[in-house]
Image (cartoon, rainbow, N blue to C red; front, side, top):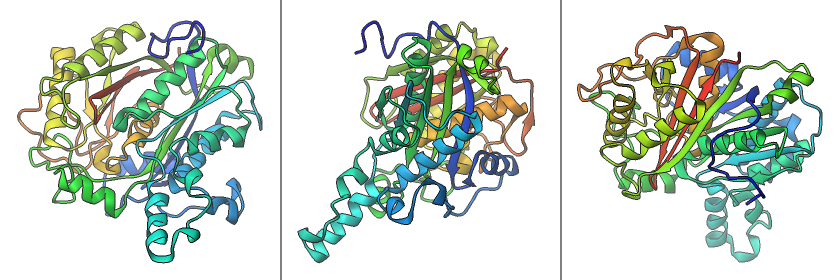
Length: 398
């Protein structure tokens, strides 16, 4: 641990603002493609990231040595960095890029090579391609970031945890700037078989969070990245500020490896701690960007947690997994990007695929059409296998 730095302490000290956004998803390459797709509200038939031009990130040989999850993370970071208008290199900065599994595609491809062609034909680049810290390292090297370069791996909560952790690094004065988010690319036969056999995947192939007919999640992939800066640093260089990380929290269910606490107690604790950290009351939250996986147990537990904390306030809630599917560690990071876009545009995207809300879900779920709303503060939730809970409070900059 850094002297005087607690990675799970409240975000205290310097204010932390968002000055850059980047996204790679099934909607395409870029934040604008993501936002427009969410507002259109038509679910895609394929949740792979479509092929995009990455030639600005390296030559053909260099790019072939990156697992897709690293490429996605690097591409999203590059978008965010360029939007923030930061210099080519910035030593006093951090690279905190999460992943749930890492380079699974590279690992499975090289296992096929091992079986079919022998050990001497396995790529010497297999290890750096599959290692979970590859994306954080690639981002660090691209921008000369010599501060903390770390990877958080807490399943589906990892992207949210990475942003909360990076915000603490900035708030504490350890760094002036942090590149934070998550990346994932694990739509593979082995992962789909594993999730399907544990009955987590939708048999219908439809992601419909909070719907009465929901039957599991649909796998997605991609990356979301935010540039976080101390307010003083951002103002001194005249940066455009898109939002502020006001609070974050991390808790554990301590209940079951894959099932959530059915009463949502760990999620309730995470939400309450986030509000305390952000110095906000429940009524200050204008929108909840839900974890909303489209699985029966997770959606019910999250709805119970939200109802417990917010009571009759009932802030409008949406899950972008209806469009994006569930991209594991990238999910919370992409949702933080969308939360910031919601603040910028004052529009709440609908929960794609959801038509009839489960009567057991006591929440104002936004469905059908985008909802214009006055949104000053968003709560973004992520709850992962292992009982990992993470929440962020993202607000307008004032």
